[in-house]
Length: 278
Image 1 (cartoon, one colour):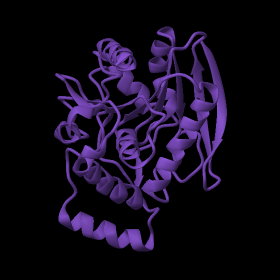
Image 2 (cartoon, helix red, strand yellow; image 1 turned 135 degrees about the vertical axis):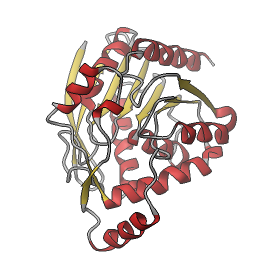
Image 3 (cartoon, one colour; image 1 turned 180 degrees about the vertical axis):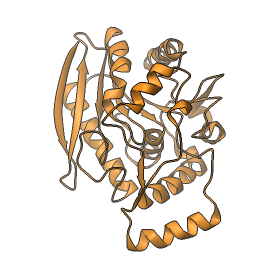
Image 4 (cartoon, one colour; image 1 turned 90 degrees about the vertical axis):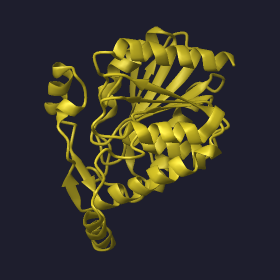
């Protein structure tokens, strides 16, 4: 497997770090958008699986994450995150302009990808995957917390606080959770602006899911304590025939990292292959 590290230059000039894992004989391309506080390197095993199955993979560190520029856990706006996704898609399309292209987003990345598919031009996309998407959180902020956050957002939008979850909520695999805890590129920060705009974007995506025009696989773990499986299910139902919903029984927040990851990745592979044939 050939691995290429490269830079993306965002519309506002921010430098984003990206990775391409190349198959010698690819039949499709998968672009990954990671979750809040993590980075693209945590998807190395996902990339290896797909490269072994003749699918090349692209990923990048979101601004304020991993090795990319930006204050940790902050974005100037949710809209600019959609611009950043366009940059990784352009990079993938420049390398493989004649192959089916799929966009995968996990958790916060799922929020971004859901909005991308509803707002931006998806003519070049063959399909999308929304994994444990942050469309609704399991624990909703109180009315007072919202009020305070909106005041802070007006005067100090990049103010950050630590997110409220433990690594044991990610998977049932203790080794995976320990690796997360000891990963120097992982953080638990979220700015007021990122939190408020992502909250609104998730609710908007659910309400407007009927705009979805490309095949989309929506999945969630039944034991997710971070993001709401009901939010994902509601999105899929509102999207109608464009979306299919899969609930992974007994799985926590990261299906691709949990003990069932082999079954999860094979399920995704079969879905991609089926979508390519339809």
